[in-house]
Length: 86
Length: 366
Image 1: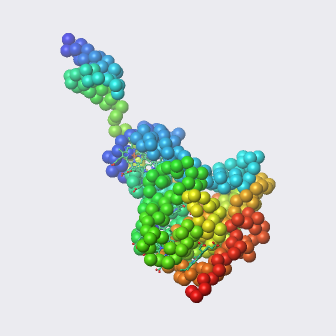
Image 2: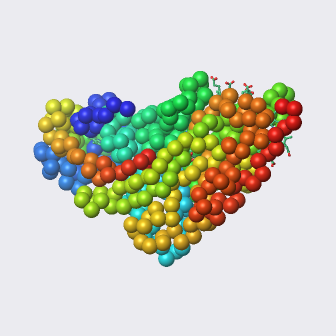
Image 3: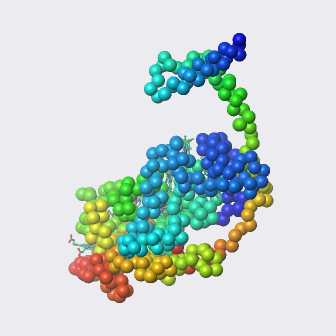
C-alpha cells in the first residue's frame, strides 16, 4: 500500500510537472509531498549515471600523467619557412 | 611571453570544477569518451574547440553575446574578404577563398581565444587551468594576434620609438579602449574602419578643440586633421606579402619582402561623416598584384581600385611629436607628406586620391 501511494504520488507529481509551463497558474503547482517524492525517486534513479567515473578529469588534473602522455613536440617546419612580419 | 610546457597547456585547475563553467562534464562540450582508460581511446572524436559552434556551447547561457559575436569581425573576418574581393572579380573568388582557407582562417577568433586559452598562433594552452577569464590578458591574447604592428607600437618595441602614452603613463590595456561590447558586436561593420569610430579619441578627451581649449593647434584645424596626424609617431609599413604552400612540408607559409618605419600624412582614403578628416596618417600595406599568384594568374584583376597606402590609426600616441612641435614642422615640410615621389610608379594609379599634391604652405612669421 505504501509503495502504491508513492507511485501514485510520483505519478501525479510528474503529471503536474508536465503541465508546468511558463504560463501555468499557481493552482497547478505540485504539492510539497509530490515534490519530495519525485526528488527521492529521481535521486535513486540518477545515482548510477553520476558515478565519479570521469577519466578526462582524472588525467587532466594529474601533472605526471600529462607529462607522460604528451605528444612529442613537433618541429614547426611550415611556420619556419615564413619570412618577414606576419 | 614565456612558452608553456606541453602539460601546462592542458592541465585543468581544480577550481574549474567548482566554477559555473565546469559543472557540465568535459565530454558534454568536447565529446570523446569519459570512460576510456587510455588517452588515445578517450580522445576519439574529440572536439578541440567546442566554441567553433558557440551557440551550443556558450549560447545557452550567453545567448545575446553569442548571437552578435557570430557577425563580429573577429568571427567573420569580413575585412579580409572585402580587401581581397574589392581588388578582384567574382570568377576569382574560389581561388581567393582557397588562399584564405590556407593562410588567413587561422586568425578566426573563438570565444576561447580571448577568454580560455592562448590563440593557436602562439601554440595554444590554457590562460589559467581552463578558468574562464573575464578580462582577456593583453599579451597572452590580444597581442598574441595583434603583435607585429599594434602590439609593438603600443608597448614601444620598435627600437627608438617610445610606446603609447596610454600605456607608458596611463597603464591602460587594450580593453580600456576596446571594451567587451565592441569586441562582441561589430554592429554590421564590414571592415575595421566601417561605421562609427570605435573608440573615438573624443569619447575620453571631450574638451579638445572646444571653446576653452588653449592649445592653438587644436583651435585652427577643426575636422581637417585626425588626432593621430599630430599625435602619432612613426609606425610600421610593409611591402609585398606573397603566400604559398610548402612543397616539402605541405604547410602554408608567407614571405613579406620588407618592413620599415614610416610617417606620412596623406589625403584621407575613406572620408565620410564618421571620419571627416581631409588628412590622416597612411601606411603601406603588404598587398601586391602577385600576392596570391600561387593560387592562379592575375587574381587581383582590379588591383588599382583600392589604395596601397591605407588609412591608419597608429597605437603610439604621444603628447609631443616631431610634426606638432611647431606650425612649420608640418606646414611646408614636404618630407612628412605622401607626395608622388614617395609612391612606386606601378602604384601611382591605385593611390591617386591619397597622394598630396600641395603641401600646406609655411605659416609666415612662425
